[in-house]
Length: 314
Image 1: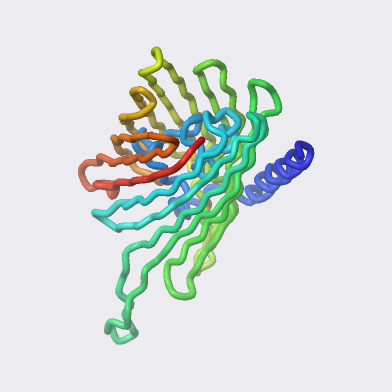
Image 2: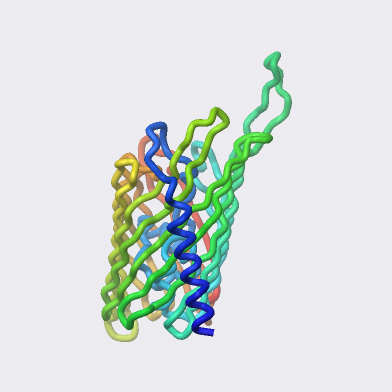
């Protein structure tokens, strides 16, 4: 079985390098920005960090599969709901993910999300209302990981991104995340590339790149006795469009039962604006329930965004 998993893993990694070959920065902007949304409420509550996280592995197919062999649990499944940018252009997003840690050596992950965007009116040639249409966005992915050294793992995600903007106007692309990750005691570090993928062509034929970036993630976990746990995460992205973004978040857990979280993201000119975030979670008998709320000021489209999720891990 080990040899079989390794062969599948190598095929996924090769696919990840194949699809990005056509990527280049597009001066007109980036397509499929929803690929960079942190749908996991644990990650969202910590400023969107999570590349080096080993705790919420159910959503590993959305960010970094290389973290799965270091995960605290053998199996983690979760589902969530997010009301994204409700004060401007609301997106009702549902998502689900699962990760399987195979003996601390291999990892398999899968994830799916569907977002229903706000409706808009359709006008005919005379300017009269001719109905309405609700755009949608979908993401589905598979992730594989292999810890080939006691202190080093390699992970790859391959995912399909789809966007329907109007009747008979649907766009799709294939993207990948590829990471190396290490964990020594409480220190975790991951480096790789996120959302590399093929260009998306508009109806006019113009090409737009995905919001791809070189990504670095750091984390540190500390347990004080059996009752107190602290986890600190930092992510940084250099987008191939020239933008830079960074995020930091922290979580405090009491008695492995109740957690409170907070974080901040500096978005700069990237596809996800700056925001602060808070959240909380409870865990009992393997079941975990988490919530997150995004705090943004001024005319930020992220004002009042919130998410909630539940899962089971053992």
